Structures are given as structure tokens and as C-alpha cells.
Image (tube, rainbow, N blue to C red; front, side):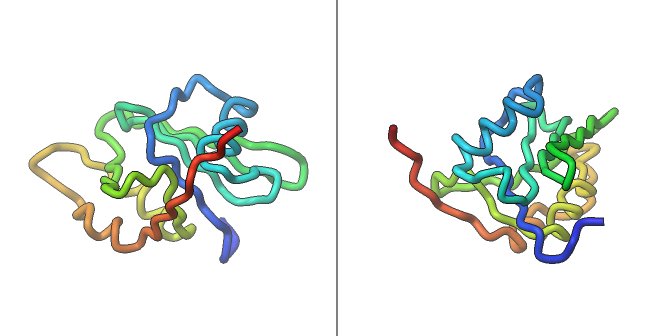
Length: 128
């Protein structure tokens, strides 16, 4: 159960999911410009859309939840404004994880139903 009010940050760009704790933490800090030690869930999807990793911290340390689909793909909503991070809530994350496109002909839910729940966060990249 995800506590109410938990912030969820979704990386728009596909991610190399061979990364684990340190690699995903670095992506959260660099690409999403969020500090994983401050809490929240950080969601990363691979290029094919059949695997997702969720990075988060609990009171003992860093955790990574992984999900790989046997068939089908997660349906990633398209963003047109150049954003690289979506800020969503926990119920929308659960809806995303359950909204799997198994075939091109049958669609469980339209992507518009997921997009309407997204709050798109536009942030300028950090310059070193």
C-alpha cells in the first residue's frame, strides 16, 4: 500500500534497466532533478515498454521494485512539450501499471484516460 500523498516521478525517456540502486538513484538526481533521499517513488520504463523499475526509500534504505511483462507493453503516454519528468499520484501509478496493451486491436483503456491524470512537470536541466 502506497501512503496517500506520496509523490511519484515518472521518467519520460526510456531507461537502461540494467541499472540498479546507484544507477537509478543517479538518474533520479540527474535526469529527473529530484533527490531520492527526500522520499517519493521514481518510475523508469525500458525502451520496449515491457519492463518497469520503481526506486524508493523506506526506513531501512533504498529499494527497487521490478516488473517484467510476459506479453504486452506498458502504454507510455506521449508528451509533446519536451518535459522529461511527469509528476503523478499513487493511484495514477497503479492505473499505469495495470493498463497493459496486450494487442493493438484490443485496448483495455484509452491512453487519454491515463494522460488526464498526469500533471506534467517541466523543469530546465541542471547545468554544471
